[in-house]
Structure formats: structure tokens, C-alpha cells
Image (cartoon, rainbow, N blue to C red; front, side, top):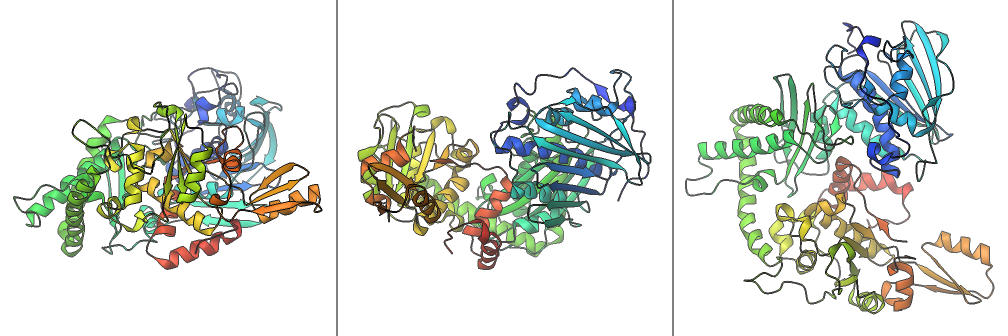
Length: 636
């Protein structure tokens, strides 16, 4: 509900910390990058401002509109940005927050923003600086105001549009092509963020409208985090029906968490601070994990499910199959960096540990049958861990007491500098042999795979590590996996997945991506995983050669060069290419079409891997039907 007890919010609450920095010259410092992620970070900044209004009770509806002209609009029915003259700058307060870095209303406690994700106050001015055109409309006290900017500079005065019954802020911007590599927004990426925000703010209505498709999506979840966990577990089989929900305020920190175990083998724990997705965790996640381990061990021993001679359950044991969301809201969040990937407030760990320990203990005592299922799941994981430890020993690098564990099928490169080396994981011995002939031996290593690797989404760690192909990959990488993973021990900084351009090849690629996501996620987070894009056709005419990746691309090329006197070769697999062709199309750093794999959103990636690679058929079918129009080939 909208907060009607409105704290005074005016020019006096807007603090100017320092002047405008040259954001346009160093955009990466403020939004991380100038690729698609950086572009969508602009939308996130504006949405977060609207979420802050809702978070503090001043708004209950937020909307985002993707316009046909490529611009995007973000609005809310909150209080509206103040427009009176700011005492320090002599400009309107709106222009102050739009043009001066570190000017914002979230640095003190008297503006009505008790909690906020906008720690540094740079959001509006950064977005404004990186846009070709920015139009802002403010509705306050019965009047609508409007101002327009270009590349961060006002090109109109603040004008009075006229009377209005509305309140809030509406912002529309056009990304600057001089700054961004591409300026097209992805509805899917935007929807993922909006859905996440709706889960985290129970009852808030968030509307997305895409004018290109004339489609409107509305997110509103009265269940909040409980609904979030239900969503994350929809492709899994929960082992207890009741979602554990804990909410409490301690020392001005509001903590909320929802937990449910499933019969899978992967951990899926998402953490947020003031609605900011803390991808790298932080003190709230550390407190959650510590409380989970301690509380489940205490309960298991108290109820004789663990004997005196038994070892304690480890963190890995109690997190196997655990799906959870933890959200904290606090007055002065300390994030690491402007992109806010990690929470650093030291006091939050103890608060989280205390609240979760108390809440989880209460749930276990009050729900003994569900508690029993959870503990039994953890004990099974502990037994499998011992088997996995033995299997893991087979994958470790050579040391003074071990025999070399590098797989015999690996054709290594001569360089020992991991930053210069790349590993090609190739489908099949035939293609592997061709790749070995065509590679640059100085920095390219080749490892062929025989057939499809195990689907690690459906297998516990000990079974995964008994798979020969998986052991070979882990051994070749040298990093270890899971909690043993150490990026500094990597033997390669680029891993290229090279499979056939057919349905089986796509399936093998998906299995490999699932393996890296579950066992070596940091490689994906650091964007060290690539996908080779081998061509489907080779077209030759009058000594000119063209390669293409689809039937549609083939038709386009033939329409351009003509269809007479053309020699067309269709590759059924990588093994049909000679080593020169393979080098030219997929291995030569100067001419190859490889794609870097990114994980833009942990919740979305978790959902995709769980849905497509998990046990349940119906969620997979629904996902495929929903996305069928977006893809050309599917392995069903």
C-alpha cells in the first residue's frame, strides 16, 4: 500500500557530494561495460529508483515501456523528484540530480528513504550522461513539469506542462550510439529484472509493455519470497511441502528469507541487499550459510539422527538441493563497487546468523516430519561426499606424490602461460584429429570427447566424478571443481566448446554448459567459456569461398552471388572439414565467428538449466513451447 504519512521530501533533502565526473569518457567505471549488459544497466538504475519509492511505501505501481523508436520509458506513481531551486546549486533540484554526480536523496535519514539500493546517488546523472536524449516528466502537488537533456546537458528549461491528478516520475531515454556497441534492448533481460523486483517487493505491481509486439506483462506477487522460491523450484521435486519463511528486524536490519529443499543435487541460493542482486554474495549470505550448517547439525544431534561417532554435516552437505532466497534491507549498505555485486557490512553476518538460526530452529521443532526429510537428505549428501572425495582425487593435478592425471587424449599446447592458452573441447575423435592438425600448437590445446557427457543436473557429485569424460575435463583445466575450485590454478583462460552444427551437437553443447555452470561457475562468471560457431555450408564460385550457418543465410548468399556455377558443400559434422577449413572458420583468432558465454542473471540461468536439464518433463515442455518462436532448432 502507498504510504500516506509522507515525510517532507524537498530540496533540503538532496545533498550534493561532489561535481560531475567525465562519465562519458569512462562509462565502464559506472555501468561495468558498454555492451548489452551496460546498456541494460541503465534501465536497472532507473527501475531501482522507482523500486526505492515502493520500498519506502511511496509508490505501489511501476511501469516500463519499450517504444517502437528504440527508446525506453520507466515510471512510477511515487512522490516525484523535487523541482524547487536547490540552495547549493542555484538550479532546480531536478536538474541538480540529473546533471551532478553524487547528488541524491539517499545519503541521510531524513528524506524518507529508510532503505535504498541507490547507495552512491549517481544513477540518474550517469544514465543521463550516457544517453543521446533524455526526457523527464515529474508530477508533484497537482502540477506536471518537463525537462529534456542531450548527452547529459539540459537543452530546455524546466517547464510547467499543466495541472494533473497524478504523482510520480516518468523518464524516457534514447541510448547514445557513440557510447554503446549496440542500442537495442532485450525484452527478456528486462522482464527477468522486473520479475525479480516484483518477487522482492510483495504486492508491488510492475508492468512491462513492448510496443513492438503490443504485448503487456504484469508482475505482482503477494507471496513475495515464498512465491520466488516456488518459481525457482517449479522444475524440481520438493522434498517437503512447506516453504520455510523467516522475517525479522534486528538493529534496523530487516531480514527475510525463504527456503525449500528439493531432490536435486545443486544449491540455488540467491541473495539481495536493498533489492540489489548481490551476485557475489557478501556478509548476509555468509551468515545464512553459517546458520544453516549449525542449526541442522544441532537438530540432527539433538534428535539422534547423527551419532556421537558421526562427523558433522558440512556446508556442502546441508546446501545440496537447497533452494533459497535471502533478502536484507538496511540503512547504510556498503556495496563493493558501483555495480554492487557484494555486500560488505560486517554487522550483517551476525544478525543474519542469529535470525536464521532462531527461525529455522523453530520450524524444525514445529514440523518434525519435514525436518526429518531435510536431515535425511543432508546425511545422504554426506555419504556421497566421501565417495566424491575419492573420485575427486583422480582429477587433481600432478604433485610430488601423485601420478600425472592429465588425460591421454589431451593434445596440449606448448605455452605454459594460462592467459595465452585456450582449450578446444571437440565433439568426436574424427573432428578432434582434424582440429589437432589445424591448430596453432603454441597456444591451442585440443581435447576430443566421445559422445555425450553425463547430465550433471540429474547426477550427484560422486556419480558425476566417476564419468570418464567429466574427469578428463576437470583434469585438463587444473582448477578443481565445486568448493575446491581455484581460478588461479587454471591451465587455460579460454575454453571453446566446438560441436557439430546439428541437433546432437547442440545437445552436447548444452550438457557441457550445464557441467561448467554447476561445477566451475566462476569460468562462466569471468566469461572464459566460448562457443565455436562452425559453418553448415561452404559455397564456392569462381575461386571465391563463402561460409554460412543456416539455410536462410545460404539463400541470402546465393541471391547475392547468383545460383549458376556454384559448388555447395554441406558439412554433416566437423569431421567432414579439412584442417584448413576448420582453422579458417573456427580456430583462427583473426577470422573465427566464436561467441562468448555470459551469465547476466543468476536466477534466470538457474531456471533455464533446471528446466531444460532437470527431471520434470512438463516444465521443459512449457519452456520450449514458450520460446519456440525464438529459436530455429531444438533438441526435445
